[in-house]
Length: 369
Image (cartoon, rainbow, N blue to C red; front, side, top):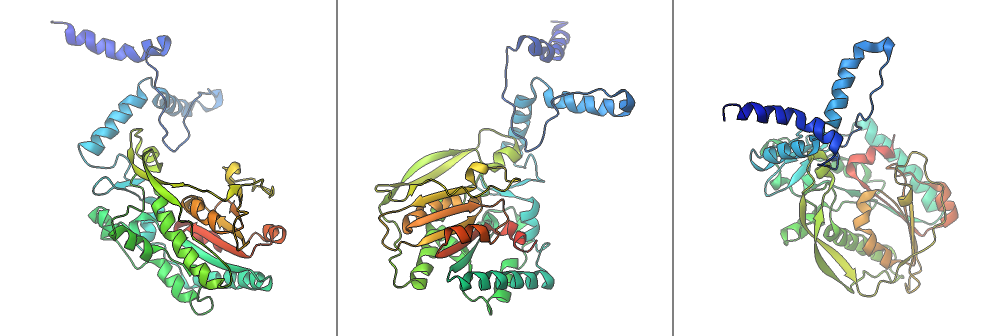
């Protein structure tokens, strides 16, 4: 008994080394949204950097790194009720998480549009308007809000206290005279759905969910019915909702835990009519990290309107896709690396009747940069 703690201490010290040889315990490396140091290169000419490089290598390749970090993060989250990485994620009420970084700066009014930027938006949309209207193409801009604007009451108080006038309101006011029907803002409909008991954003991810996709798709179709009164633009109604459990989400990577789950719902269509078709093969932007998602094409031969729709999008349209593709004769989704370009080459070849630009408001400066 006298030497028990000494022996245990020595065992703890040698256990990682022993496990590195025997591999009795193996752990999957948790995603940490960064690049790990997986190799150590000794440069005789730069030995002054070697101690720091050795430290980084040992930190990233310590045998029990994953379970120890996971336990530490779990204690901070479940016991201390604080974010393991407050620079990335804030912990709200009732299990809600909120991305910080750029979204919080926007929410706090630190990235409001200048008069010069508002003027650039006006000029860019004038250019797009002239091009599209010359070809007889209808167009709309759906600006997707992040969760803070819909679930502000679930945010921690220190974040709520920084709320500033929304910069999109300034943009809508500036654009309303020359482009009165251009911007589709889903916030009122999303808040209405939330008050009616629907969850419209994920707690563990910064995206809205498929319930929100249903709400916003209905809003878009209602507008298009008025825009194309002679066309039959239906909203699909032959589906039901199936409950499921969603694992993970972007906050799982930011927080460093692999056990985050939440309740989810998915629409199940009884008679899905829009089927995935062979793509046109538009050239993928070389810097785009998800080339398999660049172009998606759906054809609905049963659609009466025969409308051809082009959707320039980001990941927020994933939740709209199941509903919108059912409403038109043909729908092409283009994920152009968060650029939201006019994509004239695609328009010239595809010849759409309607172009929808759909993107998260965090990235909309890409329209003018």
